Length: 66
Image (cartoon, rainbow, N blue to C red; front, side, top):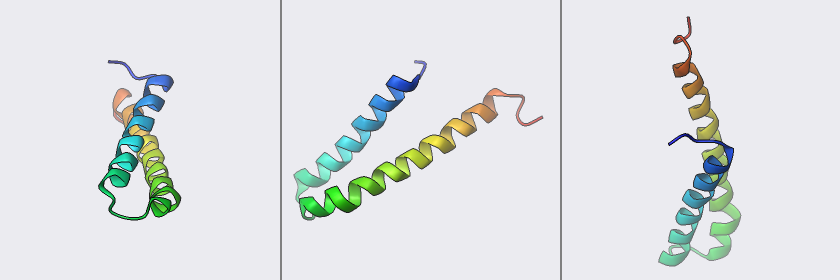
C-alpha cells in the first residue's frame, strides 16, 4: 500500500478519533478536558511523529546518507 497525502491524512484522523473517542467513552476524565487538553496534544505529537517518520523514510530511500 502506497501512502499519499489523502490516505495519510485519513489514517491520521482515524487514529486520533479512536483515541479521543475511547477516552470519552471510558469516562476517564471530563469531556471538556479531553477536548481542550488531550486532543490537541495528541494532534501535536502525531504531527511531530509523522514528520519524523517521513524524514526517516526519505533517508532510508536514499543511499543511506552517502
